[in-house]
Length: 122
Image 1 (cartoon, rainbow, N blue to C red):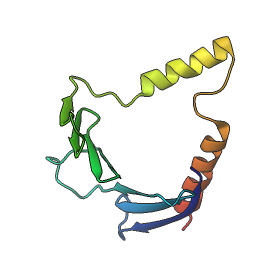
Image 2 (cartoon, rainbow, N blue to C red; image 1 turned 30 degrees about the horizontal axis):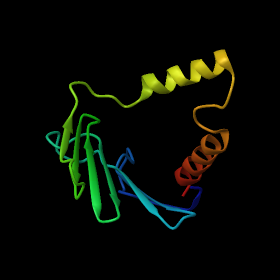
Image 3 (spheres, rainbow, N blue to C red; image 1 turned 120 degrees about the vertical axis):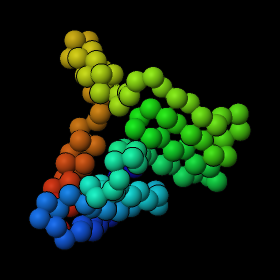
Image 4 (cartoon, rainbow, N blue to C red; image 1 turned 135 degrees about the vertical axis):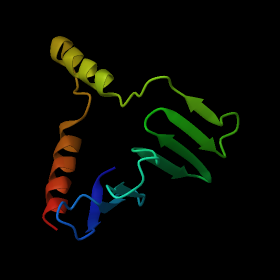
């Protein structure tokens, strides 16, 4: 869904490396991105949480997935971290070789770039 509204809040610091970004999408859903450089090293470096229809998925460091409210699913652990970069690069190369649609539509790349630049200047 297209991003229709965005805001950022940052701690006042020399590095400006602690920030929270709020996004509102055209379908009414919201997203929040936290980039915090001031936490404990014992806490997962990267965490993704998805809340939907009374259920929650929590992904820590792209290795441990925990589900809450998902019948038949509680936890999945991976041996290695997988952020999908290898698969994305392979899909891009495949598109170049065979033709077809790009793995990430140009409109989405443009939108994310535009919003990122706008947030940097807020």
